[in-house]
Length: 412
Ligand SMILES: [Zn+2]
Image (cartoon, rainbow, N blue to C red; front, side, top):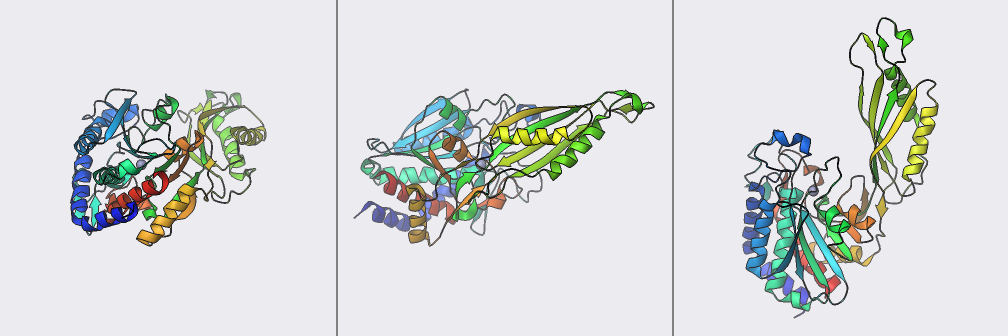
């Protein structure tokens, strides 16, 4: 019997056992409050000693891998924030597929109907913080690894499959130091040739092949402070900023429409200025968030903002780039995408389409480092970071099967 037939038979013969296993794994992981927020917000979560505390989930993953006899390595930039990388296959062909999911979560927030950290099963769905983002998909790929091992299919893979449970996806401190994918890539600790990142939702109907770049900029208007009774002696920074904001709103990006990503966007998200009604404000600043398409370099963006600034007659402006990454796009025709589409069609009767998105996932970090990475996975894209986050159990089981089939197609 060929490998794919063997996998299909295993999944259909063991549906209820796999279902029980996926539910218990997700439940156990969701109980771990691996909340990742920026350090400034840490005091709001007194039960956390440090951001993330991903070791709590990593311990579960390690136990599961050990019980299944799957080899793994741990890489950690900091104790307590590990990355668990399991390896299956011979690793002879040079092909290596990385499937990473993150162990950290965003805070529960408000508006939940049930305890966010106690999984509730209802109508074939699991509700709880992290069920979708990203502990459910993590359980799914872990089970895929266990099935491949159990059936001895890992021995038939001449390439390598890396199922990875990573830290530090949900928040970034101003120091920019990353403990997850950024760390692994910067330190060259992993070297995959391709990757599927199950962290976009889309119910397995969307394959994220392109992501916009993101540039966050602070612009400060520098006027001159004065007594509120003699405004003529000062330069009002709020008036300056008001003029600049009008120019920015009118600004037309110079770019070419991207076939998948479409148009760039700009959001003016914050404005701050002034201290008291009887003081002429000396400074005023805004934060803007630009999502760029390929071709729009940081220099082009800054040049365009500078053109807006020159239209404001008085005062100085300071422009600071707080963070910036480039857009990326891979061809929707690569083998990785084709195999996802073929398997989804043949075994799930789904027709996933190549899409682009404005946010950044692990796929961006990987693609910018030369690795063909796409986002594809189970779950409702609207259920991320909201109250009553959920995932469909059937999708988790289907995704485990898809992971196994993809490994066979790409690595056997
Ligand atoms: Zn996520």
